[in-house]
Structure formats: C-alpha cells, structure tokens
Length: 183
Image (cartoon, rainbow, N blue to C red; front, side, top):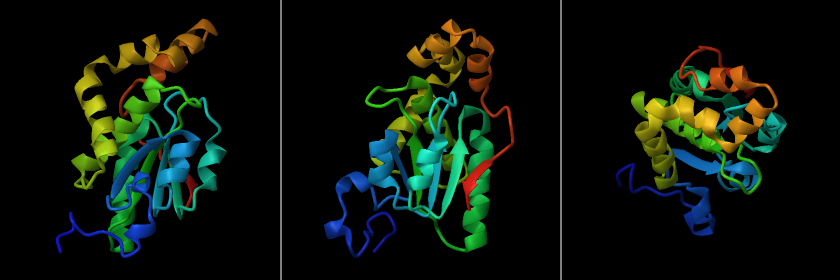
C-alpha cells in the first residue's frame, strides 16, 4: 500500500477530525489542539503572542515548538532535522492559537506559513485543512504586513500603542530562533 493511502490500524476508532492519516495536520484553538494533537510533534502558532503558550503543553506530543511568521523557516528546518535524527517520519500538528471561537487572521496566515516552509523542505503529506491554511498564506504572502495591521487582533494592539509589535510580527523569516517548549 502506498504511503498516501495507508491508514493507521486503529483508524476505525479515530475521528476524521484528527486527520490521522496525514503527516502534517492543521487545526485552530484549544478544541483544535484536542482534535489533532496525538502526534509526535506539535507546532503551536501564535502570530502576535496573545495566547497562553502553556495550553500547548497539554498536548500528548513528545515535542512542542512555538512558531510564528518570523521563525517559520527556522521551525521547519528544526522539524526536518528532528525527523532525520529520529530516522523516521514524524507526525506533525500545526495548531494556530486562535481567539476562542473567533478566527485570527494573523494566526491562520502564520500557521499557513509554517506549513508552506515544511512543504518547501519536502514534508508535504498534508491534510486538506493544512493545504488550505498553506494556500491562504501562499496567495496572500505579499499582503501579510497589511493583513496583520488591519486584522482585528492587529487593530486592537495598535489601539493599545503596540503598532511596532504588530509590524515586527509580520516580518517573514526575520529570526532563526526556535522556541522549544518541550522536547
């Protein structure tokens, strides 16, 4: 059976929302974390650092990284190196922190950017949900700066006098730092 058609032996008991047959999965918020977090590696995406990152540590994932737009390529490189060190394919959940039941445009774009960077490194067996997030970033990459500042979250921070924080968060690949929350 090819890798793309293989499913886990326990797939009859796994919810489709878990996206378990895919190497790279995507969801949003605490509920999304609960749906897709039974993976080897969790990438918690919080574009503007507005969420409590400790939520990600509730995941059963062995390894938890924090990512955003500024370190997406560094995170993808770390994930690939980690996979090589282990000598096997790792399952990855990219979860955008979200804002409760509200879509966070910066988080969605940043999660899509992380997925885009994983794909660029050959980690490309993505769920449809991950592919859609990636496509959102890919198609809007030239407007990211504007979308961050014009978004609800961006406007809230700007109103609080934190414009530079929003502008800095929209700088794609501006840092090579990888925040490892658990390894």
